[in-house]
Image 1 (cartoon, rainbow, N blue to C red):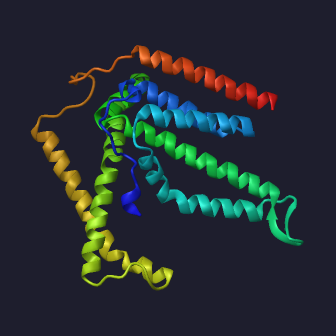
Image 2 (cartoon, rainbow, N blue to C red):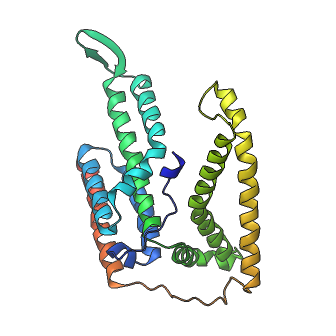
Image 3 (cartoon, rainbow, N blue to C red):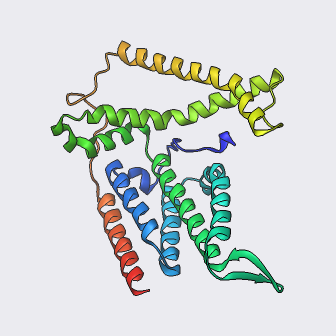
Amino acid sequence: MLKDITLGQYFPIESPMHRMDPRSKIVLLIFMIVAIFIADNPITYALVTVFTLLIILLSKVPIMMYIKGLKPILFVIIFTAVLNVFLTPGTKIDLWGYTTPMTWEGLILAGKMALRLILLIIASSALTYTTSPIILTDGIEKLLKPLSYLKVPTYELAMMMSIAIRFIPTLIEETEKITKAQQARGADFDSGSIFKRIKALAPMLVPLFVSAFRRADELAVAMESRCYQGGEHRTRLREIHFKGIDLIAVLVFVLFFAAIIVLGILF
């Protein structure tokens, strides 16, 4: 299951989304999340779904990677859907003359929530799939720059966020290695009661934390040995600039967002 988590991975391929400015992608992602949540009827949901499929096509990342990224939250989607179906008050569902505890309102709400979660994961994954950690750091720093006038360490915040995202795949890989090593020594993580399984995680968590702190120390030493110094006077190998494709993306998204609002009011 852990190897199915693809958040933080970057695919260095050529696509329209890869050429976009990271600031544009971050801002548009925020508005995409807002659009997903304000969609409230079949027409707006269909429009948001089609727009998400367009994002997948423009990213040129294999669709199986997006599907793979959904596997870790599959339990959350199913669990949330079941709760909504059985706990939402409304008209009971009749099956062959038998009145079930499920309601039509709960069934509709479960479908909406499941679709929202799926679209949120796909839209968020598209950002990390098409933006390298360094470029993402520069984009976040530029967006947070106004806060620097309030003495907020914007660059340090951006760097911490970027490193955290970047090391998710690394920690997942390390967890897989430790799990297999413990299983080879006789550890059992799949059987027994829930308390026994939690107790069995201790031999895995201790070396995982040790490895994480060791990697953090190695990263700090490597940055210091290269005389790394972030902040206002730091130079960059690649400067980010808005391009024509960013303007086109913004215009298309403005039309999309306006359509979501208008269709939500009309229907």
